[in-house]
Image (cartoon, each protein chain N blue to C red):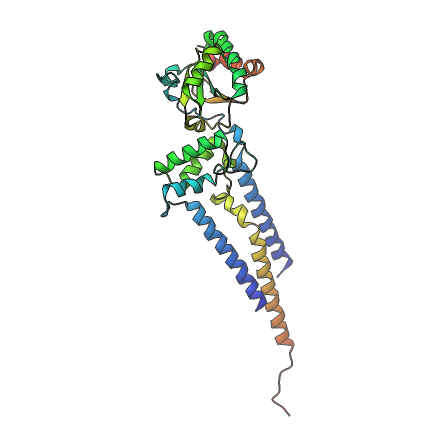
Length: 145
Length: 179
């Protein structure tokens, strides 16, 4: 039962991660206001001249210019994904604070969970094998004397 | 589970991890090099004196696009170097064009006049969106565009005579650089 729980937990984690990645990658409009959308995208862009700050946080002139561009693209009805791609094309993928949302890169995020799932599966197989051996070795109850 | 199966599973897990890492690293690249090798963005709008400006009119020339501002101290040091380069290398086919980044047009025009760089046309970019379209990090920053309209080099910080010699003059002298 414990081994099955382990496998179940591993599978659940992988599924939740895949679902979260799918949501992030889709980057749809949803029901957010243009200001909220712009703010959310700005928070996902790295200020290229700051130490660990997003475009939303930075007070530099470059970040201010990038915010103006995000707001203009939101106003032109570009999706969040299209806006991220627009900046990636000009600044490289490292401009994204959460860059690993493409299919190929999602593999990298999933990789640590694969050994966990495989380990759970191995554990389950071993437990089943041990249980089967125990059952085979047990004396047959003869119905009493 | 047999040792062979375990080995296969292990190799698969390691391969997936390594493959994912390689793909991610390969797609990241250097941010400062993102523009080099790409077709240069358009440069069209109003200059700091209110006149229309369109860099397409200089198609076929080597362009040095300089992003600057009057509030930027290193830009004040750089502008006389650019003015001298425009004078010296202009006959060989170099055109220097500015993008006045998040600045007041009047302040920018005054500074160019004071520094003797009034001949350098500059696009007004008060909200900085033109600069961002070029992928600018800060000011001063320059992009060297060949006659086919492709960005060939990028300079973070002030342009100096050494950089002009190393980057601009060879491009002017190359087969694609002749007027």
